[in-house]
Image (cartoon, rainbow, N blue to C red; front, side):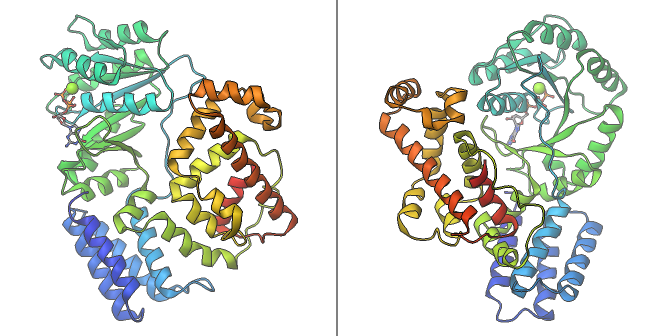
Amino acid sequence: MIGGLGDRLSSLVDKIKGAPVIDEKLVKEVVRDVQRALLEADVDVQLVLDLSKRIEKRALEEEPPAGVPKRDYLLRIVYEELVELLGGEETEELDVDPSRDVNVIMLVGLYGMGKTTTAAKLARYLQRRGFKVGLVCADPYRPAADEQLRQLAEEVGAPVHTEDTDDAVEMAVKGVEALKDECDVIIIDTAGRDRLSEDLIEELKEMAEKVEPHEVLLVLDATVGQKAGDHAEAFHEAVPLTGVILTKLDTAAKGGGALSAVARTGAPIKFIGTGERLDDLEEFNPKSFVARLLGIGDIDELLRRTEEMLEEEEEGEEDVLEGEFTLKDLYEQLEALSKMGPVDKLLQLVPGMGAGRRAKELSKITEERLKKYKVIMDSMTEEELKNPEILNKSRIRRIAIGSGTSEKDVIELLNHYKMMKEVLEDIQSGRIPRIGGELGRVIRNVLRG
Ligand SMILES: Nc1nc2c(ncn2[C@@H]2O[C@H](COP(=O)(O)OP(=O)(O)OP(=O)(O)O)[C@@H](O)[C@H]2O)c(=O)[nH]1
Ligand SMILES: [Mg+2]
């Protein structure tokens, strides 16, 4: 993705990992490689210079925390500075709330940026999260705009509203009116122009006043490179944006330029489009994006951090082990954990978990199983999720039938739940030592509920 940036950066990681010593010469070489990679990806020269200066200064001056090898610390510095370049640690989630009557999202942007395609992609993304999504065409200008949206809506299986008028605002208002009862989220595909003209600004402002959107997302083609920054700024001045979706990153050699320029404006990049298919939409998160660019899996990441964590005792985490540990928690936490890497590998990092029956059994929790567990849990009542003890034979049978799985599957889930609970108790009683830091937190979250 985004040209050779990933290739260049991951060979840099190999260089750091393979260097016989981490000295000034290597640091300078690394800095030069980072510069070259970023400039090639069209990142602004000044941004690149600032970043490389910071990397060099930090690498030469900062002392790694006790127990952390210099090598790992250098990697960490490169990683942190790249994350900063692409928007920092904080990420903003899409503001959709199931308790609202309806959530309204406006997609805005110039001609050909990918609004209509992205509307359908976003619909699918939200459907997968359990929302009922409707699409509204608010583009009276582009020939057959309604037909294009209709076809895409059909593909994702979403209701669509089109209104036969040449007034974009009216199209949006009537569309929301028509779909709001049957939908949780309504996505409005607005009309573009060839530039940010007065009439477009007026149209979008008036529309926003009338439909009161929770999100106004600018859809921007990443192939424009650094110009994406000014573009985002100008739009934001005209209509307050809640975020940006950068499209066509799959084809954008200048993607690094677009990402860093938009990040600099402070507008959160919420999604990236990575292809023409309707599945090609990803949540954008600078941390995991950079980890991917560097080719360091989150496992590496965690392993590296473990070392420093062992040193430091985090404060304020004493009570996290307390409280009810329910099945629901198990699912949520396992899901969070599995995003960081294979569950079994992670659990092996916990002292006392590496071998034996429990580790063997828990290593069976693959992504596939997690999906199955979710389906099973969807067939349970709130009460059952909270008090799995009440699950007797007949309840288990009912759940298996309801979820289209087998009784064996349900029992397996319950066994895994019990096992995690045991581990929790072991940690509480001190039979398994506490571990600190990020990994410790994740593991404790898994175990706490
Ligand atoms: N490769 C790639 N192509 C994309 C992506 N997103 C959109 N496209 C393509 O970009 C072209 C324009 O997309 P549209 O969704 O029609 O753009 P639009 O902003 O609605 O265009 P107008 O309504 O004419 O203003 C289409 O051919 C899409 O398939 C992406 O992430 N990657
Ligand atoms: Mg369109």
